[in-house]
Amino acid sequence: MTGYPLPYASSDLSGQVALVTGGTSGLGWRFAQVLAAAGATVVPTGRRVERLAVLREVIEEAGGRCYPIEMDITDADSIVAGVTRASEEVGLVTIAVNNAGIPDARRAHRMPLELVDQVLDTNVRGPWVLSCEVARRLIDATQPGRIVNISSVAAFHYSGQAAALYSVSKAAIARMTEVLAVEWSAHHINVNCIAPGGFTSEMMDGMVERMGDFSSGFPRGRMGDPAQLDSTLLYLCAPSSEAVTGTVVRVDDGQGPR
Image (cartoon, rainbow, N blue to C red):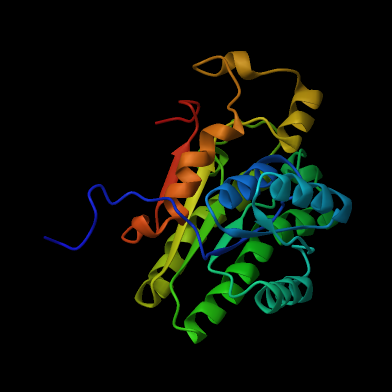
């Protein structure tokens, strides 16, 4: 007997505080609701406070607990202040989902420096700062935690569709996952990553508007539904995935190269 239940597969997040960046739309909007439905107190963050207020109503009407916080993921001071406020108001952040991200939609040689900085600040620097801030507090409190980063299949394959820096930034997120998992493993902070393919979201809607519907070119001829990411997110956030760290899970409906 190991002392573990059979099966050891609970996704109950009661007592956890989960911070989700980019919670005002797209995948983050869904992630916040999923984690709340699993019992976590959810802290969705973003810059559009009116959208955060709507999300709070949605979650609370469903019986969940939600405490939205305005946060600019490109501003380190805003990140630190947001994590501090969450800790003071609802408790130590034990789950962080680095979901906020932006595309570039430009050829590399045509990107103005301002856009380069914006993509890297949002997609790489912000998640790094947030992860370190959350981990530092968990280490100081000698508490375990979960960090889930959102990468993309673009981290592993680039088809030349004017998103070179986006691809680079998502590859950085995948590698960041691996190295931070090593650094924090002894502190029982698990760092993992989801690399989605094409899923419907506000960002994807913009791509479809620019390029037309390209989902017919996917192996299954469809765009993914955010609900199809629920089980992976819950698995990586749940206590029962305690031995899984430094892993990048591709959820791409067969779209990415193998």
